[in-house]
Image 1 (spheres, rainbow, N blue to C red):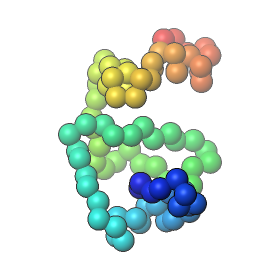
Image 2: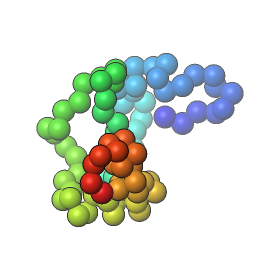
Image 3: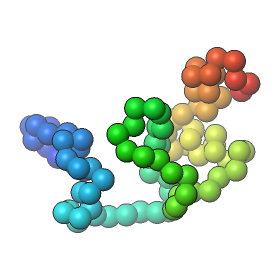
Amino acid sequence: MVAEPSHGKHILDYEHHKLWTQMTTITLVDEVMFVRGVHGSNDSSFSIDGPGFAMNDEEAPKVLKKRFQINLASFTKAILPKAKS
């Protein structure tokens, strides 16, 4: 959702999972567009079933670095200090 800074509302002020029923949308499915964090306090459920990008363990770090500037090894080390990177 894109709005002027003076609009005063945030995407979470709306039922963000239903916006597509009220607004025109553009869906580009040729590249990964966002990263979703999953944790115990999410406001919506998460399922690994359904549409998505299938990536192997070698490809994921490259895509995260290219699209989002996320260094997966550093990220993993920061959230799981004993994890091997």
